[in-house]
Image (cartoon, rainbow, N blue to C red; front, side, top):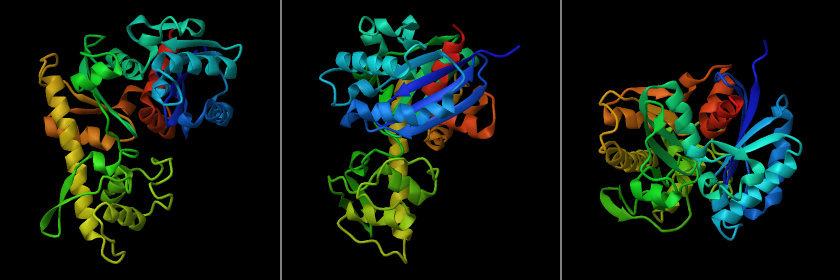
Amino acid sequence: MTEHLAIGWDLGGAHLKAVRATAYGRIAAAHQVPCTLWRGLQHLTAAIEQMRPQLLGSNCHGLTMTGELVDLFDNREAGVVQLAAAMAQALSGADLRVYAGPHGFCPIADASEHWRAAASANWHASAAFAASRAKQGLFVDVGSTTTDLVPFRDGRVEFSGYSDSERLTSDELIYTGVTRTPVMAIADRVPFAGASQRIMAEYFATIADVHRLTGELPEDADQHASADGRGKSVAESARRLARMLGRDADPADLEPWRRLAWHLSEQQSQMLQVAADRVLSHGILSEGAPVIGAGVGRFLARRLAQRLRRPYVDFRELVSGEAQATEWAARCAPAAAVAVLAARW
């Protein structure tokens, strides 16, 4: 008997992610491509066409998004409606539904009616999927731009805030990721050369440069141009980071910049721990509840679990399939989640 396959789409402001999976969590394919949505809907159309050849084999599609936040749209409602319409046109004739959080899936034609529930609901899909696989846990998805911290227990997503505004207030959404975050958003002062120095409030370097210098960032994780449009070698990352301090990096001596990178990486981890401590302070989870790590920055989720003295479970352990497919499914957890949930229709 052939397992029913569905395709899950996650429309972000900077990437398009798609996963083909079964209701039992077997991943058949998982892909991510850069999509500069803020520049126009034609970039989404082009990304879909780029993705289409790898995602044949199902007429059942689930959709979630965060891209309604980009400044292409006048407001979030307009973003949800226009993105839903663009997907409906691109996947004409498909059984396409949009994920509306606690309301489940709704027909794509009803996106305008459910726009509040559909807007930036991808975190809920991921946590709902995790809740179907584990009794309890803190779901931590560290992506390119943001981090989600969502507790779940006994099959329920135990969120304190639902909208982006509410989630920022509750610390369940932290605007820090492992590639696109500007370094100036991590710290305003750093130790260097025996002194405490302010850093420049300029877009000279991103956190991807930091994590390249620490050696933790996967080589294929950073899909957008660097801050200066140049290459992504360790030496080039050091040069960009040095510019944040008004200095020049010596390619023959990168150790000072590696030390600085580790300091900034720890600062980012501290941000996540402070937020996680607040989320956990509600007392929803037991002391033994694990951290479920997802996203391209799972190395930070694993580090967070150690800092919280909790077990760590990788998202890959919640799904099955070939290694490359499950790796990308873990990086694209919301798309994987809506694929599995859609396959259960």
